Every structure is written in structure tokens, then in C-alpha cells.
Length: 328
Image 1: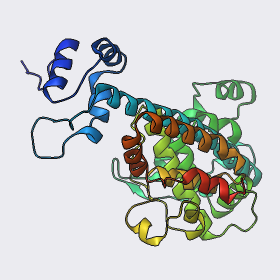
Image 2: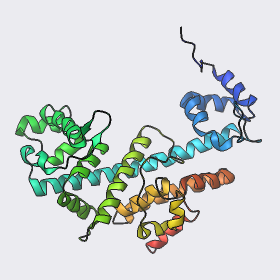
Image 3: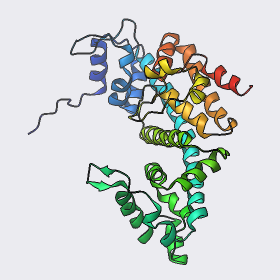
Image 4: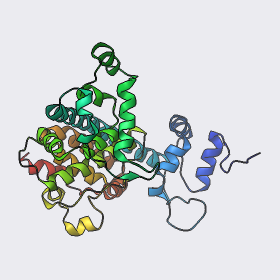
């Protein structure tokens, strides 16, 4: 019989464990309620690091004066940031698949036999998990969706018309599959997709590179947020390339970028969104909400507010900087 390293302990024992490590619990009923709603792992293990004494002790020790409510407040503001982020990225995903499917249909037509011709797409790289090219892996998934669709409206189109046009197919593609479809598309599809989104005619290779990097970053953040991941210090393994034009709004120069700011942190997400959303008004709701949530947190936890801004890699005047760029 396998003995678990982390056996079950009831709520009272969980609180005793926290108190033995120096955490103050003024309201035990409140603490129990939150642990039942959230789990010890998600709440405590997920958000304790900011409040721990740094050292080599095997058992966690909390900074003197740290309360359960402080950990909960960090968890709460991070949940608000996550909800705002997910809402933004769902809007971006919709714009992306709408423009991509339009561009594909615009160039190749709406028939599966035409627009899904493999010659329209690059082979891509060989993927380690099965030693197949990216195109082969993507099309094996797409073939299943088009030959035997399992969701609407693909089922309806297949049954009634015997064909699933690109603007219907994209409704059953994940964000990651959409990014891969774009990545493997020929240059004319990429150019048209960006042009339709950004309302610009001059689309150069640098713009295409930044666009693809942004989409990869959005995909990572979207999946992380959708699965309840911690947002305030999240840093995926995708980086935006440095471009002074896009980074200057948050006062990130080359030196700061080389130190990590704006590469894959929350500030990178904001920069990518500013780039993607050609009309800044589309981003204002997100920026205003983020600013309001952080201001509320500052009122309750001023010391931790400074720490969370540092983790987000956002300048303290990020709201004024973004609004000022657009004359607001």
C-alpha cells in the first residue's frame, strides 16, 4: 500500500498547521469557509510565497504579522485579474479566428477541397512528441472535425451542404490550433489576416513576427487563465521580440527588456494587446478594470500592492501612461 506524502487533514488541523508556521488567523470561521470554497492547495500553496520568510527551512515560516486575510486578498485580486484577462483574450480570439477564416476564404474559397489543400500550408517543424511535422499533426485533427463533426454548427453544415466553410470550421478549433493554422499559412493569408485586424496596409516581416509572437503569448495566457492559473506572476515560455515602438508606452527600453521586463510577463500581455487592438478604445475596458482592481487592493494591502506591481512588471503609472498615449 502506497503511503501518501500529503495525507488528508481536516480544516482544524490545517489551521493549526498554518498557525504553527506563524500565520495569524483572526477569524477561524472565515478561514474555514474559504478553504472549503478554494482548497488549501489553491489558496495557501498558490499564494503564500509573497508572505514567507526567505530561507532554507524545510517548513514554511511566515513573515511576522502575516494574516490569513492577507493571503486571501492576494488570491482574490489575482482572481479578478484572471477574469479580466480571460474576457480580453476571448475577444481577441474571436477577432483572430474571424479575420483568419475570412482571409483563407478570400484567397482559396469556401470549399474544403480547396482551402484545406495541404499545398496551401507550410510543413512546419517536426514535433518531438510523435516525430511528425506540425502540418501533419494539425491536419489529422482538422480531418476528424470535418469528416465526422461532433459539434454545432459543423454538424449542420456537413449534413445540409456536405461542406464546412472556413468561418464555420474555426468555431471548433482551439486557440492553439488557430495559431498553428495561421503560423503554417502562406504569406498572403498572414498579410490579409493582420491587415483586416489592424486596418493597416503596410504589413512587413517585422509586423508579422510580432503578431505571431503575440498570438502565441495570448494562447498561453488564455489557457492558463481558463484553467484557474495564478496570473500575477505568470510567465509562459513565449517571448515578445523587442520593438521600441510597442514597448515605449510602458517605458520599457532595451535595458529593461534584457532584464526580462515585457518579454512574457503581464506587461508583455498588455503590450501585445495594445498592438493587436488597432482601436485603443477596445482595450480601455480592460485597462480601467485592471486599474480599479489594483487600486482597491492598494487600499487594503498597500505593501503587497507594490509587490504585486513588481511581479506584474507594470510601472506604477501604467494607467496614466496608456491613457496619456491616446490623449485621454
